[in-house]
Length: 233
Image (cartoon, rainbow, N blue to C red):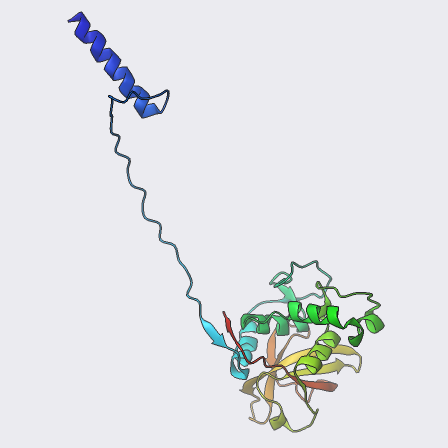
């Protein structure tokens, strides 16, 4: 009986060692421990939607910006690169344009910066802002740089008083009080009388749709930048 107790105690001790993971396990002792299976994790993977780049989709992207609450703030903020952006609750007129294009997969921060690296002197950044080199944190957020970029890589169109010359997705620039550069995007929605296309812009009230095409002084630029490619949303 005493020998039986000793053997039993030895076997029990070896089994405990196997369960706790302490020490080595003899080959002849095989204590199976059933572990509960972890609950299956359901991972949500958003579907990648291909958005063809066309003026109608750019118009929709601009209109979508009017659903965001944005405080007008144009301060210099260091950004990551590429696809860098200021905090979503702040922005200026150029950020409306940058964010609308980015919704369709086009990064104006990267495009403008790379072009300014190739031909910095073609841009007014040195003359107007005293810059000595491209700056990916701010260059794409300045109207005058976007004007030059759209002129070089898109189309510079006539500035007319005919509302039918302005198509959804076109870009228009102004000089408020003849001085301050401003930019907006023409959208497919029209004024109450149906005569003029509305403009999505931010002049201090956040992104809004307004009938300002011929009301905001002074309309100085009309551009079309429609890359003929498809992108992922």
